[in-house]
Length: 404
Image (cartoon, rainbow, N blue to C red):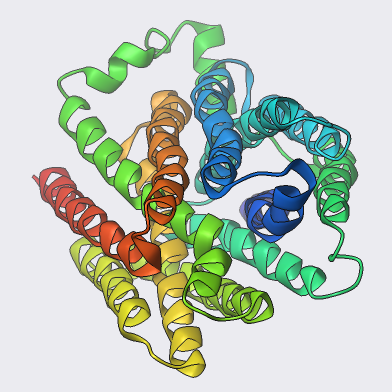
């Protein structure tokens, strides 16, 4: 009987992480879509660099209320239901992107698509982390989140084909794929066992009062909430600068658009590897060592981008940044699932993700303003360095407090 139960639990864990991986692949497609379609959208709508930065930020801005509400509703009515509905919202408005005919309507549909995707992300993290034992949460979240760079790398390859040359096809692909995944979620995705146990306690009257936003700021959680918010904010700012602007930064440095797309592909392939490895190290190493490694790797990559003088060096620098920037985001999501208890985990991760999305929204806009002001690619990359230093310091403080 015990063996049968363990096998069933393992099956549920595998199915959960796999389906969450598929949704993360779709997120990667969407994040990369904006950067790849940027040239076509700029020409179609007649945008300048500043407006293009606003376009990048519109979808990211939608992630903010989505992450906030998605995590909250997931704690109240269930992880699975909210994930299905948020994926449907994202699919509908991604398809709408190809049908709008003004800059203003483009921003609206990108915002609403971002809201759907933003609601999904904290649920993916929560489901993946709750599907396994606490000792394996870093690995589970890392394996789930490596779907993001996989999706982005796939889209980079699609962009090099005749199909991907038309910017509208990029968004058709991004909208139709989640529609295919939704029935799979309905049929096969199990609800979180930890959530169901918490609901059973509510039904028997044995549960604590339902957690609220205020619980993130009680005596136990206040310091860790502030620390993880700051780290999410500055890390995601740098992540989305790289995701949105890397191909354009290459053209600013004198390389061709095709070479920029190739650099983005190397960025995403190494990001996939880095996310899995860092996720595994989160479970096996001391947490402080993982933080030092990943933020040190990001800084090394940013310095390498600034100092590279040949195409080969730029490709290597892009791969180095990708391995640690995206991997770092996966580790931060894993930390969010470790920091908060079950009853407030969805809310806590959702709020931290929402705060991170503010940084993610501001990053591409600030990069666009720096480029428009003539600071060039080197100025954008240099501006990212202090953000990484601040994030590393706050994460190390958080680890020290968790130990205490």
